[in-house]
Length: 247
Ligand SMILES: Nc1ncnc2c1ncn2[C@@H]1O[C@H](COP(=O)(O)OP(=O)(O)O)[C@@H](O)[C@H]1O
Ligand SMILES: [Mg+2]
Image 1 (tube, rainbow, N blue to C red):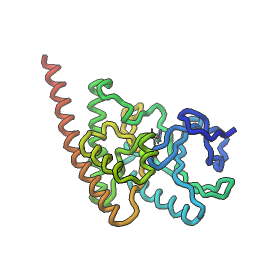
Image 2 (cartoon, rainbow, N blue to C red):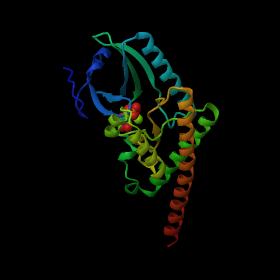
Image 3 (cartoon, protein in one colour):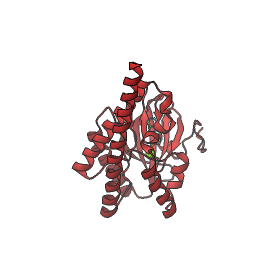
Image 4 (tube, protein in one colour):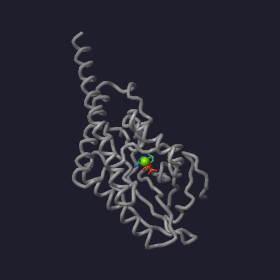
């Protein structure tokens, strides 16, 4: 039976009965724009993106999400991204659901759940090199398309907050992005069991031409800042390694 609670780990899929899955869906997380479920066989995640009364609008939204996800994946490359397929489904009440389907990264952790100091030095170097590669590719993507993936994202609590328009919260969020090192605590980046860092969220976060230029421009500046910080962190890690092995 489908429950309607949203407790992580609980079998729950309120609107997603439209998928008519033969297996249950387990609620994983809700970020800023999405409720995320995984299939019981741990093969896929199902991301409930939006509900819309109008079929045409829902199809347009799915097509737009697909286009952006494919574009970002082409720039990030298969080692740092996932295939995402967008569908429109109708639930029992006639609502159109825009749904994304992705392979489930079993055993992977969002970076905000990874403590850098608990990793071996080799894993720390690999993590930083992965991040540098993602930042380099994201900047190349920005330069050729004017877009870049949101690498940072929101956690579950901040995510539900972010669904509300609140200028004070936006300012606080902007300041957090500028003043802290959020890339190492990003919700949209996951560290896989084989040591890759993968971007899991490709959602566009702006609609008008002007807001897109501003938001992606600001994002590109943050990427340049991240590139410099990661370069310094890598250098320090290499240096301390050389010093330790010389002792
Ligand atoms: N493919 C995936 N495999 C495993 N966990 C995932 C996957 N995609 C997302 N998640 C988990 O769900 C969280 C939110 O996903 P995300 O796509 O970023 O949603 P939102 O658009 O709401 O930010 C991620 O931080 C991660 O913990
Ligand atoms: Mg996200």
